Picture 1 (cartoon, rainbow, N blue to C red):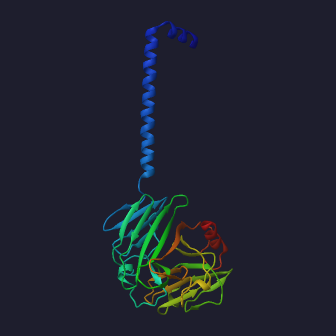
Picture 2 (cartoon, one colour):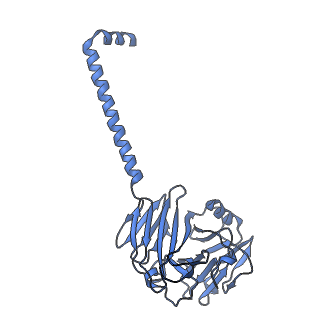
Picture 3 (cartoon, one colour):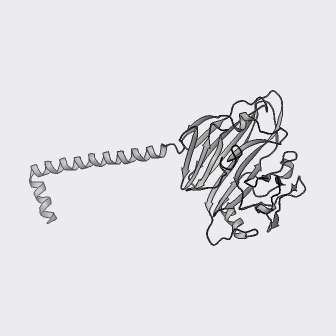
Length: 325
């Protein structure tokens, strides 16, 4: 049958012409379709991950992990959630002390933190996977901050690059200090670091398997309470409502900590409404115009159901170690 059709095609000029027209049409249609699909793929690839929603709020989503930042309120991270499950505290818990911010360490300044750095509007630069927010020049501290947040599609995480610049005409000695507030409750833990540095606590914690564990218990919170401690491995984790929130950062020794501060600090307020998960970078002296750059990586995961959320559980610490690798 196929041989007869080929013979008819060779013997009939009209059939040859018709076949050629159809072949050319198919080729053009294929090229147009490929171009459309390829153009759509390029547009999707170049489409910014961050989008402005309202009132200076920018939001990104990778897999089911969503982060939102309020540029009009100190470039504060106001939401970090897995689908609809929020891990950060919100304004309903406290009108100002909520979400995640960056402070200057050590705390040799009077409360509250500098408004220019902590609550004033930041300028915004948006580029694909990166959202960069820059504060105004703060005369009070002599510093300026920027926060560049990158969406990591490879592991559904977010990298936050903090920059502190000395804009004064004098040397400034500072360390970056990330303060992240979560609702009171749950289990917080981190690897125990080098002994011998500044260490103080009026929180009830326990060391098991080289990990410091803090199980929040409302009846044991009797006022403003805080833990100061050097960590190891460069991570801090918090579990609540079936979620595990992990912060990963460069590990520092006790000799790099700011005076009367530590690499990891935990705080509970006397109203028993929130916990502060605090991690600090290395303490440095900046000459005029110099900067500190510090990167903290955030992960949010569902805890597998077989893993029990309790102090000393090696499965929990192993889950973190596997994630941050």
